[in-house]
Amino acid sequence: MPTPVITLLRRSLLVVTFGIMLLFPLEREANGKTYYHVTIKAFLDPHDFSAVEWTWVTLVEIPKRQAYPEQAALAERYGGSLRGSVLAFVRAAAWRSEHSHKIKKRCKDRPSEMVISWNESWNDKVYAMGGLDNPDNPDELNFGFTTRPILLQNKRWFDPKSRSYVALGPVRMEGEAAEEIRGNFILRPVNYIDPLKHYSFCGKQWVEQYRSAFNNFHIHEEFYVGDNEIFGQKPFGPDDEKNFVYQVIRTSSRTHPNWKQQRM
Image (cartoon, rainbow, N blue to C red; front, side, top):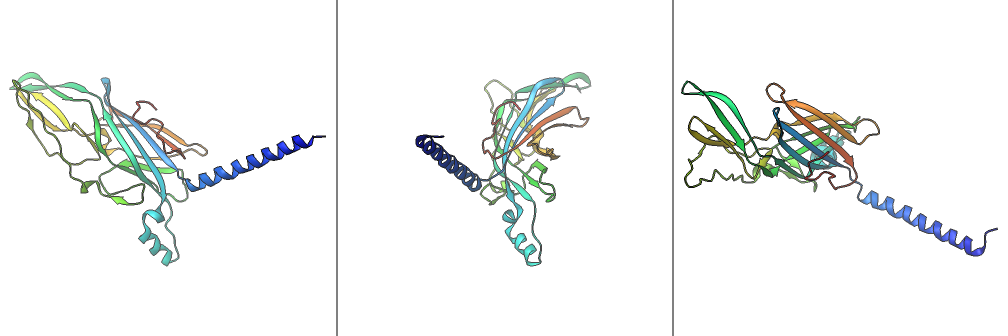
């Protein structure tokens, strides 16, 4: 037979346990958001695996009826509903390694080489969004980088093009030839603080805007049943000679597990 003291202790433990069980479901319900953490590595040169770009993106799931309230109200007026979810933008960053390579070309009808290079740089602005567009399959995901208006985590829409984009041109060093600026420098889905891509050929030096491999990146993927991680790869480039490796993690945690870390 348990003593009165043991019985009292057991009851106290049950009360504490029950209180904890009540507390955490309430907290989970209050903060019950689903986050999608994307990590992508782009191999830029098939002959140099150190030539890479990395990007890290966090998105949060928001029902479409909240993202598009006017359209949702119109659908309900006619007896329907707006289903599916938008993956709203929380934050993003990108990084590229320093790299230089040569291309054989002819200069004044003689064999020569063009040198193409860029410096290491972090991102200045990165814009991306996703969606769970199939309401009958919440495991089906779309994701990509864009300069179109994106939904932010506060459920407000933001147009990246509404912000001015200023690019710093080449810095001329004393005693060195000046680099000519060619082409337009415009806002892109992924914009580095150092936006320059350097060229040297046939006695001339010039720069163009560096175009990130992520600018046209898009995936349409699906989580396996019971799994909260997607890991895959896809080729890119004229001859599919380059490669993306990507990971998507679905979780209730807002913390990106790989944030600005070169790992998956």
